Structure formats: structure tokens, C-alpha cells
Image (cartoon, rainbow, N blue to C red; front, side, top):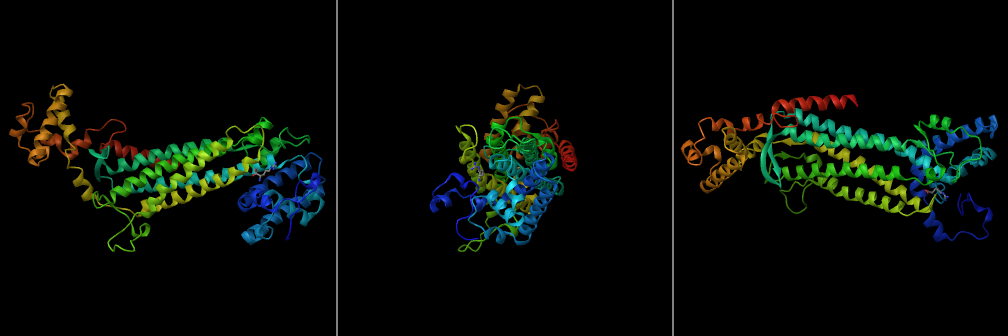
Length: 466
Ligand code: ARG
């Protein structure tokens, strides 16, 4: 099978293809990933041609058998099978050539009423549908790991931050659930993207629709598509589903990279709230003490390439005239890499979460230092009748005083505190306690232990449901 492969379009050509251009034009190096999806699409198309009376029963049976043989050979030999004809133009011509070798004329009839334009759109949608499902499953696994981590440290507390300055203490499970929420939205977006991906373009032919009486609805059913495309011009040139997948994937990566960044910070000596497992860290070739959070840094870094692909896909479809244009061959590597990067990043993130050690003592100590109860002081004064704006001012002056003495608010004597406001009484110390600080955040979505326990149970239930 060496030399120039047989073209699918040779008839009107007099000169051979320039070898440099052939290489440039070739997509088989990467679109071989669509092999199985494309064969399945061909099986359904062959059956539709038979039902329409275009193919005889015997020919259709030979075709179906031939396609099954191709699947078996690829499964058996893997890449070696594809490398036997590595010079094929694309996965579609590779499949057709193998089929003709096996079943002769029946293979030459399969392309009746079909174009590579509706064929590639069909294969890509089939393939992507499966990938979206598997990525969704991996998002779920990360969510499961977050819930396990939350349940293992139900009472743990850490400082919450705004502007990366200590703000107010929060429960550790509350922090875990914040990421759970982001990933729940991601799963919704992926499901939406899947819904619009799961539409059959086959039967649109090159652009105008097919002149053969194929039952498109039946083909859709056979391939598990939700419906058939309504306009042939749109169907062969629509890559919205690729863009949507890359954009939904970009948000997944945004969330993973924020999680990564939090954990990278929390694992530093400066924070010390968690310790990453040796299993997901590396050492330094020079500094013996180092334990570097490479897994998380790579997740953060790989976010960039997914964003890059999303932008590349948007740019790819911008200004393309109707309908199919070869530009669109560039969609594949972007979509493939988004899927691969999402899968590996999600997998590694789950491993990090399943192996992280939470240093509850350090985190709790940090949550009581840095005037994190100053808001409680203001609320205490406000509850005693001081307008909040004034209460805020008074509490601020107390903080300034404490800073001067190197003492936290709850370390100041009652007499000292009363210098700022006579509304302060003995019960202020209870109000300033970590327990009270948390317990008062008892509205929906707040960090009080009851609300967080409910949220955790609800999250667990939602994960088991769907
Ligand atoms: N390899 C091509 C792609 O990915 C397949 C479709 C080719 N269609 C065509 N009219 N040349 O877009």
C-alpha cells in the first residue's frame, strides 16, 4: 500500500498532487480518532440505502459485514492498522479503501447520496457525544472527591479571604462545596452542549440535501441521535457544537485552575492548611527540602491551552461563507485536545483531592488570628442599637488599638473595650468566639454548621441522582 493512495475525487484531475500539498492537506494523522464513529455512521448509512432500495440485500449485508471486519481489525491491531496506509488523505478515504479491498463494488456504492461533508459532521458529533459523557463522568468524580474531603473534615475551619486578605472564618466543607457548585454548573453546561451535539447531519449530503429517499429519522434512531438537522446548508457547516464544548470546557478548566491555585497557596509553608501527597508532587534537583505542587500547577497551566482552542474554534468559524470549507478540518485537533486536556486534568485533580491531608489545627489557628472577628464586633454593637456604620467605625478603632498592642479583639480586657463603647458587656467574648462567628451565618448559603451540613447532604443526594 505504498505510493499515492487512491483519491476519492480523482476523475477531473490530470496532474498528480504535489507531495508537499498532500502532506498539508492530509488529516489522517489525527482524524483517525474518528474511525469507529465514522464506521458506525457508514453502517447506518448502508442500512438506509438498503431500506431505500438503493442497495440490494446481499450487497448491504456484505457491506455491513465488511464494516464490522474493519472495526475488529482496528480493535485488534490499533495504530499499526492505520499506519499500514498512513498516507491516506483522511479517515473517510482510509475506510472506503479498506472496504473496497474487502467487499469490492459494494464498498464503492456506500458513498451514494452522501458527501464527506455530512459524513465528517456526523462522525465528529458521534465521537464528541461520547467524549462529553466521559468528561461529565470525570467532573462528577471530582465532585465526589470534594464531598468525601468535606465529610472527612466536617468541623474543620479555615480563614476565608477576599483580596487574599483574611476576611471571615468559614467551615472547611463550605470551601469544598463552593467548588462542588462550580462543577455542578459545569455538568449542566456539558449536558446542554451534548443535547445540541446530538443531532444528525447525515442526509444533508454535500450541502443541498440528498436526492435518495433515505429515512433520516431512522438513521438518527439507529445512531442514537436526538433528532435530524433541519437545514442542509447549516448542517454541513455548523461547528457551534465544537465551540460550545470548548467553551463549557474552558469554564471547567477555570474552576479547576482556581481550585489548584487555592491548594497551591494552602500547601505553602506560609499558609500550611494542607499537605499534598508525595504521589502528586515532585522534588527539586537542587534543593533537597522542596516538595513542589506540579500536578496542580500543570492543571492551572493547561487551562491556557483549552482557552486557546476555544478561541481558535471561534476564530475558525468567523466569516466562513456557507457552506463547508476546508478550514473546518482545523476543528478536529482543537476539539480532540480540549477533550484530552479536560480528561487528564480532571483525573489528576481527583487524585490530588483524594490524597490531600488537611492540617486542621493550623487552619483553625489561622482562622482566629488577624481580626477575623471584627465584623462580629460591629454586628454585636449594631445588635445593641448602634447604627451599623458607627458600629463599623468603633470596631475599626478597636482593631487599630489591638494592632498597636499586638493583641486580637478577644484578647483585650473588657475595660479596654468599654473605652470605645459602653454598649460592650461581658457577653462580647462569646459573640467574638469562632463558634459564634460561624453559627450566626445561618441563612441559606451561609457557613453555619447546620446550613453546611444540610448543603453537604443535598450535594451528596444530587450527585447520586444524576
Ligand atoms: N478531512 C475533512 C475535514 O475534516 C473531511 C471533509 C472533507 N470534505 C471535503 N469536501 N473536502 O473537514
